[in-house]
Image (cartoon, rainbow, N blue to C red):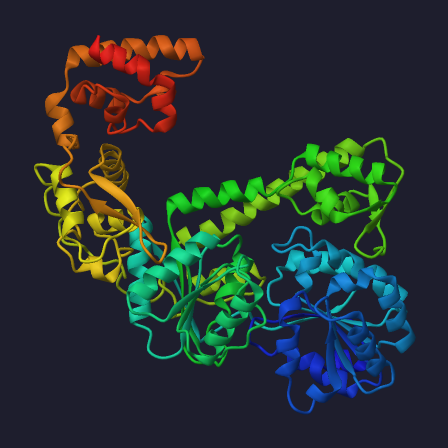
Length: 635
């Protein structure tokens, strides 16, 4: 605050909930010129202004793309004539020359850059429009700069200074949050993950919870499962309509909703003090992202829990995703050519069609970092991009840039996985990552102060029925409320995802001793045979009904296969597979696995429908190999 008021450039590294906003609110009131706050949270600007202290709210406003042009002009006029002293805007707005010119005319004295780590291409949340802030500051006559972030390592802090072209004072408070407990729990599968989350939420006494999941679909499935276990849960992701997102957010803030299952964006800028649990169902993208997410717990200083659910499978997926996020050289070349062919003015949507699945602005930003292009003020919705003289080492620059990007992505993933797998104090690991010293033990993590696992030890599953097909059909016929395909499999397996009514039925855990993939296959086989029939209810749900009049196919379990294998037939099938693999020029196991051949030799199917009941034979392989297999089996 002293530095900002006195007019010294400052970079503030302060953890979530430590009061960063107070610093620029007070500075805005004490400084003679207006203050601009650059915030990436366009959707939350109104909420931020509405919740300002009563002494500041009357002299604060915001401008963003949700406002009509006339309203934006009116608000900026209020800033110009001194009625407003604090104005929130998105960094993207600095790309508009008329906006920057107006700010220059007004005479902005302090520019606050919230989430300033977004300026670093090597940080965990790079946003290319932040690169233009240094140019805009120069256009504004070099006003005082206050950069704020909760997640910047010492290297990122140096990168921020370089990108903004300033040498700010560094004010850093401890990243240590003594009221937060850091727990990491290893889970073997999706069912373990559900058990842990249900048990942790059952232990929640007052307050609310945020559960983060990687995909939109998983947020919906988790919220549905938690609701089925009596929790007031809702899901939130960018695919929802704006009205629905607002409804979920408001219900969470008011306490009507106890838990929100969301993708990573939820919680940014939301000042809810009594979040008592933040749980991450999957690995986050980085340790910085982890700290940012769990930091939304316990903002009121009261003891609160955080939980990261880790699994080896998830760790492998994270590493693959991290590398796949790095564009290929061919994609950068395609963007460069598109910019060149456009004559320097390009529509982002058209540019996006050149590189599907990528944000074209990020790729232009990378070309800018390689000093191959320079992006200027925008022309309405179009980007103005100037091609620079191509140096002789242009290809080498791109390759070096991408190599570094891939290395950074891999190391970022390795760091969060290492954090979870290490048996070193969690608080000490976080502190060290952000350049602090911390003396363990902390007494507030699973390493220094272990507590019992949340994973329930299930009773031994019952043995599989002698006639699996008949048992499934009878189970479906006995259900009080019919189920869809997915819910039926969950019920037969004894999953927590099963609906409440089904968990009280005789069908629950009937096939708990079988793998989920087998149960799905058996249900599909009975549908193919006509013993299970899909019906659409009056309210639009698709459910399965049983038809007991249909002859049932025989379903072989692993034990049945071992007992019934015709070894001579298995050998003929292996010979056919070897010949086919040579024709297709692929390894033999790509054609069919040994386990599938042995099940074929036990089941001796006589039709494509019966082939569908064999493990490892999906529709594609039946279409490709079905006739050949039937010829070998029945030849």
